[in-house]
Length: 288
Image (cartoon, rainbow, N blue to C red):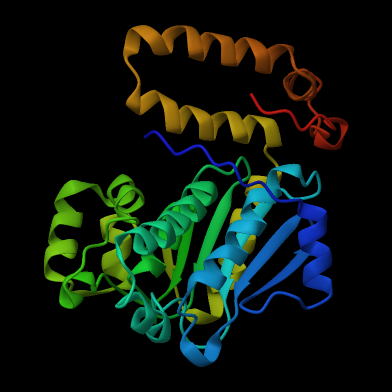
């Protein structure tokens, strides 16, 4: 699945300083134990997004690749909902936009979602309540999604005379054409268990087990080598959409680079020496 090329890149340290100074209006950030928590923080509006919120999220995810301390990104939300889709006040303004203005704001959402989708670090969405419209795009752009039994999901765009256009690549990648055809055209509400069956979420648990389940995923991911994870994500992006004759050299080059690189050397030595690998030795953040 090809992705756009983005010109805007942000500095992670500057973004974290802004977070410490409470300069972000619609999101909260917390970095602890090599995990960056990005909280959607409009609980009074069920975390509905507008152009400013999209910009704030894009700024953060664009800079994460520079952060040597971040191993995992968790996308979560304050309040009772995960994300109610587009903010009604924003939609009222959009009605009066011409095509050029609509295109510009739609592309800003697309860039944010593609940047999230293409991150080198693993990403997990934690869904404790309703997710509607574009909120499903945020979920599908992440590598993993964990949902509470109380969560529910709905693609309501067709009820507004619209289509889930910008978020469709991520939803189709996760759920496939058949399921997306049903959900796109009907706009019907589905339960967390149905979302699991359809492939949108990886696991559904009772509300009181949600964070413990997340902790298990994080612990497992942190035992894997960071550059190896980035390489796996690149494989998942490139291999399904490449000609087999062309992908042969790409995959051979990747494993050769990994075997001769610092992480690969440490991982293989640790296995042969029957000890745990020390990924802290791998200070090189270059990506395969």
